[in-house]
Length: 421
Image 1 (cartoon, one colour):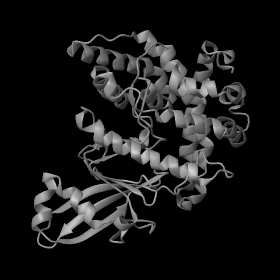
Image 2 (image 1 turned 135 degrees about the horizontal axis):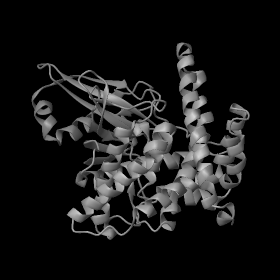
Image 3 (image 1 turned 120 degrees about the vertical axis):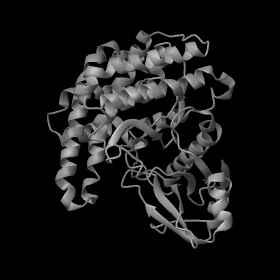
Image 4 (image 1 turned 45 degrees about the vertical axis):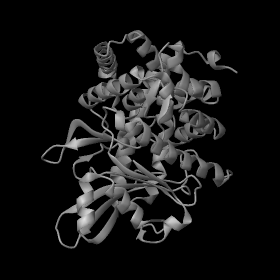
């Protein structure tokens, strides 16, 4: 993967993005694509007629924008199509922002996200048997003078995400479990010195959750948004949400207590970051096309990503019926894959369940907090979509309500005094 560093000279206005906040150097884009055989012959033989950029973010990105880039030529009808992911250091982090906070920490965080994603695609992705996009070049933004850019394979019209309101079905979750088992097998069989102790993005997430009083603030917003409906859970969870030790446990340490080894995890594993292949009729299949947005990849729990998918992205009735079958599928697949490598799996399914419960409580609290956060987008949306947006929010809040009730069932296994400072 070709990489470069953003600088003022590189950002001469040659390809202007539609928000007019940044530009991408044409020569760098073309040079990056020429390094790949599938594009090289066209770019060297035919003169370029036009480079078009279309913003396809669709409201899904908070710190980056995604552009469909189509390069057309003068003498042939064939085109080259790629996707540009552009990370803007000057964006905000709406769910975690505080009005009294300097913009410098946010800029540093966003730059760090982009750098981490570049590292993942450069050092790990080429060796994985996992659905990650082909990356053709990356522009780093280490000094935050301009946006970071990743040129990657386009899945436009070939795959799409499911909406958060629709969520995953059970067949998709079983496929996710199998893919994650294959992903984790790679790292369990890889020499520890090649990856362990090198990635710790979740520590910064924990600090931000604590420093912004994320849980306390947003649980109280939820109380006002749905008076009386969530009170019994909010009252139980508020003391937990104020304890840094509990937040760290839910995000980082539950698997350690259960005796599980660490693996590399995606870290932001939800509907918007998983694309499913389209059927011939345009509907979505149950086959994963690609998993994107690796800026929060981290060393952590084997069940962290799948817990996020089960709690945030699956309706409660389906999750309640299938969650332990899905976890069993993950465990059985990983066990088989390790045996094929001549390796022993050093933990039991019961340990998986224990870690899942500890992580489940944290994830349930998280989606309770996202209800008020998601509703903040309504005033910016087209009036004609108000009813649809309201229905989707209410469906998500119902998912959060049932996750809360299930987490309350698990809470006695993790008493508050366990996390007292």
